[in-house]
Length: 264
Ligand SMILES: NC(=O)c1ccc[n+]([C@@H]2O[C@H](COP(=O)([O-])OP(=O)(O)OC[C@H]3O[C@@H](n4cnc5c(N)ncnc54)[C@H](OP(=O)(O)O)[C@@H]3O)[C@@H](O)[C@H]2O)c1
Image (tube, rainbow, N blue to C red):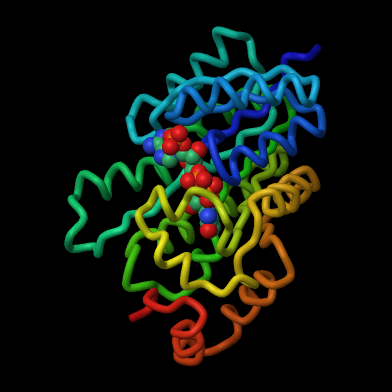
């Protein structure tokens, strides 16, 4: 069996776990990382048994500055070659911007952006040496949406990540390294509970909520076809289309029905 692996952050739950399963279905060996070690042990063993691939895990908190180096050293010491890097870990902060402690904002920025940049930076040279690589950044439809009164930094960070993904493509496509920004809309995962914003999700109409499995299938398919941006499901593709063409005032009015509370 080869020593080529996909490294997936935030693989203990939701979209990350489903992406790991989708990749394993396609015979990629996987390395799962997150903070919940018990879940990583369980899912890692289930994946290797169910899909006949090699699977390993490493507990790691991406809000810590040395986390990317720890992950890289783990792969090096085990001679794992990372062909696919999935930057998926993420959450939202529940409080209004003026209430959240700056320390929480900094941790949030590290998990959703700085660690993504650091992981990409540390794994890129080997991908270049190997002559191929796929990077996925799990972004969000929030990257295209108007700012919301809650989560002041979430949308801006996701926009930043989309632009970062574009920059990677501009420079590294010639090395056969491709970056995909996966932009899901509302997805049924642990995200809203873990982020303390489950009430926001409860108010969203069912037709806007998609399964993590569906997001992962479309995301992995798009990434393996070197797509630059993937907005899964027709519903959310249409919404992103509207976000690009409809005047902001009209969209804000519609949002008060589709995502009550979000834009008050
Ligand atoms: N759910 C949605 O509606 C939605 C929509 C658009 C985009 N997204 C994006 O999708 C991505 C995955 O979210 P999800 O919906 O699958 O939520 P989820 O089920 O809550 O999964 C989040 C993952 O991130 C990990 N994580 C959180 N903080 C971490 C930290 N400090 N260090 C390392 N890992 C950490 C969690 O693991 P541990 O707690 O075990 O560390 C978990 O595995 C996020 O980037 C999110 O912004 C979600």
